[in-house]
View (spheres, one colour):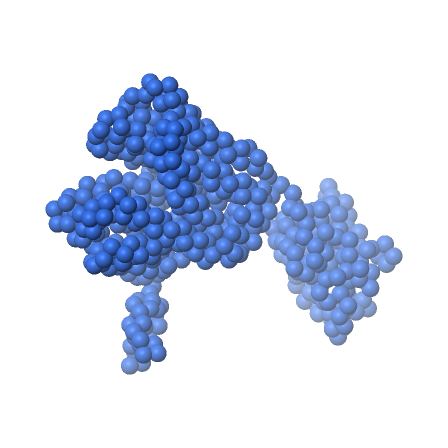
Length: 577
């Protein structure tokens, strides 16, 4: 018996509607075939409009008493009221109109797409009470990725099996990556005794992203994401294992580390945009912000654990073991990728090989204000606002004269703030440009306040909200850019995003370092905050103007309030005055 809405409700008064029979013929694939509910309620006044059978298709067979599953007890559609047209999906009176091949068949609450469910056009009539389109059922769409519901739960994206496997693999791999970063710098310093050599190692690791980052995005748009990640993760694992063998055997030289750093950088050129764009294929748009936020939380957690484990290994058994564990840690993400179910991925069509695809990607971003301005903002903040190694070391050594312990404390508190910011972003569940602008302004303002902090403990405590605001900027910009981008362009756009964000610090660090050396840490830190604030304010005003908004200044409950209101509304208010 049908359980759909209105199955047992009283029928409406029987009124004959001639327009239903003469003005709205049932045409396949164009006009929905509808049956008037009033006619269906009264069989005596129902006027069937059976279209002629098309050549090459079986003739339509009207539903007759005693043979149709749609009885008077279970459905308003009775004998002689609802014709069934060959080659189209039968329509039950009182349900949602159907357009064959295009419009979902709605029965109660569950949408059924024609051509994907057992009630397929041209096969079996969808009889009330027996059809998979019955109210309250949820048919599986054959060959399609499942819908992922929107949710504001902090860990909602982990309900998706494929993303859960990916996340667990990244927990292990990110910890190993942070271990290798610390061990790599320490090994170079111990081999050469030169801080400049450490700087060269870092530059070699980021140089490929600056040189080839956009080309990596082009490749990612052409290639399937999961096999691509299997290759890049395996390459980085082999690099770590090779460095471990050289170090543990006692044959390591500084040029070996340089080559390893450059090789990891080359793998990152493809791995980074592939990982960023693969997240949307795992979870879909509804869970994208949550998944991106959890990825950031994952990375920040590894930032807390990895260096500590590396320090214990370096002092206990040597740097080679840190490299070995990092190489072995890639087993986790590789296993997670292999265990994923391909049919559950939200697969997008790959971009075919062609000329001018890099220029096409740049033109695409340049023509989209909702993409170009967040990327420009991230570029400014990454170049001038994220130079914390320069500032925090100077504050710990020159301003507060507290040594390496204070420097470690500053970084730990900022990492805790970043972790909190990532979890808050995961709970928020949406990415709005106004949140991005507000977080960027707050980030710059907090840096200015911290620059003039009179005591070490106040400065240290301010690292927590700075970490929250900085991570909110990163996650919100990342998510808003991904969600606004055509899937066919996502690899190139995310490559540009990561190139601007990651490549900004190596370019801005020398300038910021010069200002800090020449005028002191407080001036350098305050300058970085002011540039971030100015960039966020300017870009916020540009986006508001492009969106037809104006700044509205006023008072609310005795306090000043700044809002963006539609420009037309402001003009009406001015005209009224």
